[in-house]
Length: 125
Image (tube, rainbow, N blue to C red; front, side):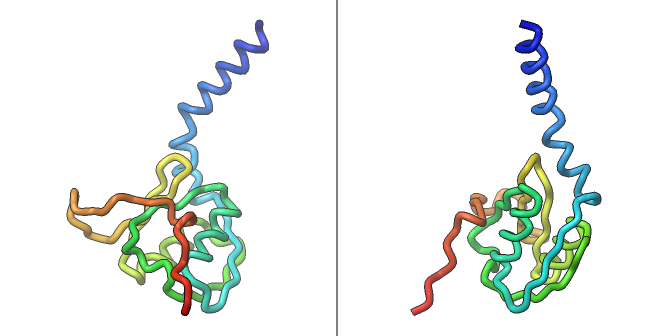
């Protein structure tokens, strides 16, 4: 019974700290990326594989934009800024999710967010 109580307490504790844990850790998470002319979607997939975080955004985000990046041990927040600011997008961490949105988008006019890594890239003819 004590083990069950401890397990339940530990699980509830994890649920309460989990959303803040990842956003607080954005400066501490280090990413290794070495891509040349890769679609943004693939870079986000690499980041997801290294961090366990998921990406959500709108279908209007340019996921097929080609990017080149060679970084080892770069902080997650710096990497996301480097990738997304030039495309006029911003990001935020909520729990274990990174939400990508258009910079300065009027509130309430944003389309519904979808799981970016589950979207399929357009097939070439």
